[in-house]
Image (cartoon, rainbow, N blue to C red):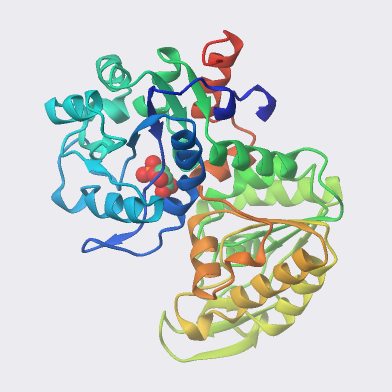
Amino acid sequence: MSDQRLPSVDELDVSGKRVLVRCDLNVPLNDGVIGDDMRIRAALPTLRALLDKGARLVVCSHLGRPQGRVDEGLRLAPVGARLSELLEREMTIVADVVGAEAVEACASDAEVVLLENLRFEPGEEANDPDFVGALSSLADAYVNDAFGASHRAHASIVGPPGRLPSAAGHLLHDEVAKLERLLHEPDRPYVAVLGGAKVSDKLDVIGNLLDRVDAICIGGAMAFTLLVAQGSDVGRSLVEDDRVDDVRGMLARAEDEGVAIHLPTDVVAAQEEGSPHETVALADIGDRMGVDIGPTTIGEFAQTIIGARTVLWNGPMGIFEIADYSAGTLAIATAIAEATAEGAFTVAGGGDSAAALKSFDMTGAVSHLSTGGGASLEFLEGKDLPGVTALSKATDTKKGRA
Ligand code: 3PG
Ligand code: MG
């Protein structure tokens, strides 16, 4: 999928028009308090550009997974309040998605309307044509800027491009361009650093990267399934037994491709999450489980990262939310920051990597911090994202051009 085919918001004729903008404002929310507003901030450039061109906006997003029903805890009002503050504009926040209140607000002069949580409507996830029709009828043009949700073939993502002049927002465009750099002619050496709990979530990404990267450093609980596949004893560490054969096949392919796979040789070991810990060689793990990578492993991973010209990072090296088990993830973030400072192109994707960088106050450590978790993984797996495909088709038919 080439971003060349994505119609740009800059070419869309929006002056005096009402533009439906699909954003991914799915932020962590606790009792109405926003945990991290990165996705709201990331939506601002496109919204500002459209307002500057004289458009009136109808902004929409999902929040959480309410499964087609109204969930009072997942109303978009707190998100709208923050968006209004950051955008420095009045916002008309309506309490329905395509009902009478939404229709009336969109027909009014209101400069910015925010629709209620799209997933309160069963038609959103079902990609119901009637719902697509109702949503599209609220506006004269459509912009998709929801990179983080563009792997979902949901109504608000794939429907409007078939009905309205459509374009990709700046965030969607930028994410696609940055992630494409990781798949096409990356500067070498190219190192992938992968972590997180489950190897099953990452096997397709590894499969697509094996003929591109020079080395892969693997930490987090997912490393233990690889270590078991190599015949190591990993104590009571998390292992996906049903994936050991797949992993053996992947390791054999890595050897054929000449890709170095770096795995932990020492770990922080504990009886259970939160109990006292000790750093040991992997061979001495006994009946404990690994909760972070150890200093020898950190040294090896860091050396590989610092020598790279391109780095992709997805997933923490241990249970970084617990301070005692965060040293590995912090050291990897620090090594990536050093590579970035040396001019390497570095990308972090996935909600946990973003949360880790944020908790270390290091969001500036990478060249690009993706707003997408599942979406960035699917992109790097080599899959076409439904939201990107829908916009590309709109371009092919010259729909969506000014
Ligand atoms: C995300 O947070 O991954 C996106 O907003 C998509 O949400 P979803 O995984 O619930 O579809
Ligand atoms: Mg997700």
